[in-house]
Image 1: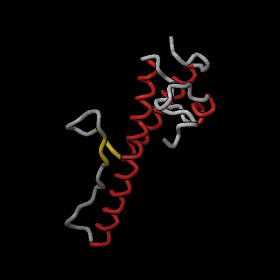
Image 2: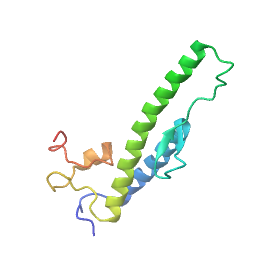
Image 3: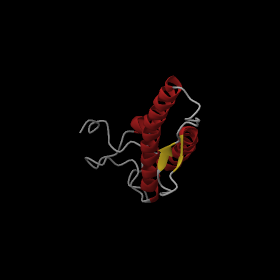
Image 4: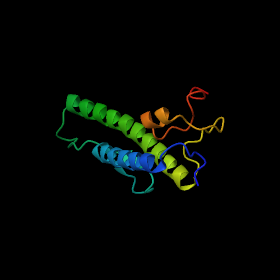
Length: 124
């Protein structure tokens, strides 16, 4: 039985699974699974023929890759948080503040189903 009985675990599991699919889709748009580590993602480099490109085009492609890298890191962190929340559901610890051990507010979980702290400990 989940320690946090005042929330609908099934509802939040469904929200997390839907969000996970969206984030994975977004990740596929800017990156790929790292061939050396299937649990890691990496930004995909722009496809450009370096020999036929001028300096401006190369600079634009480098800037695009840096943007993709930044977005990839952000999405990968979000995906990790979602997976962690889903693991907490399996372990019957979902919705419990990691700082104080109290229940995380339902409104907070609605806003961020992967939240790890209650509002009181948000900035700790």
